[in-house]
Length: 297
Image (cartoon, rainbow, N blue to C red; front, side, top):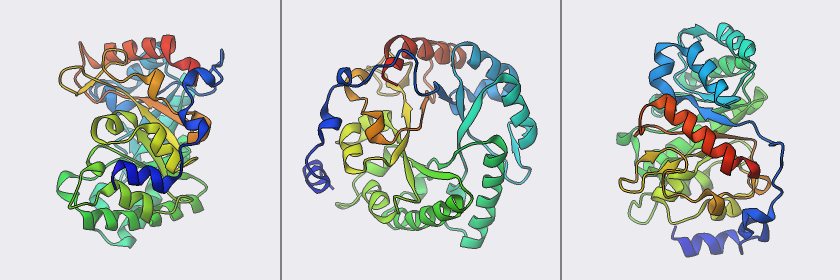
């Protein structure tokens, strides 16, 4: 769908979407915990998860999004789910969402998928998470037919997760916006999934990098559905990831109204391209966010 048709179909842009952030309430006490996607610091998490979480808390992060759940063993980062929850409790931090490995189940039977989702639900409930998130599909899976197949799977998972009193979301990258003879995966996901079952986690970097839309325009088309955000910056030269404040994305201008979005959680993220190392990047982004952007959230 092209940009003009998308906006026309979604209606005239609402006033809450196009207002600058300066017209929103800028709270002295943030409404949302400052979150971090742990994939951003995966090298340190592989070495010593506890020390890494201690460090992240020290620089200001309070909530996290996990990755790499071992469904067979019921483990996060080498710890049984219950033991990992004890670590979180001891540090007084939370895990509100997790990225789970659904990609390998795209072409498996619904029964196999259901059993995997059951394990994800058990893990998420143990951590007291609110959301289970489908993070991506592999490059060889990115066809129009597979986007349709995935949308069906998303609905099935969403219903199963909702029945367990948890939320389910899909996380976008850039490949969903790629054109396939006039069609794209993003339109298929939006149009062929039930909004009550499948929420959305907007990666603002990828929206900015690969689509013709702004985050505000996407939210105007699906208000209340974007319950989570990923916030990261784009390198000025390579368009790769970079620390917040070092790149080209002006979050003062592009951040949508969180209430209109339906925002519940956000996660700062940097998948690579660290100026020095993953620990310093986490700290630098936290410092920039607290000084410049946290007032909006």
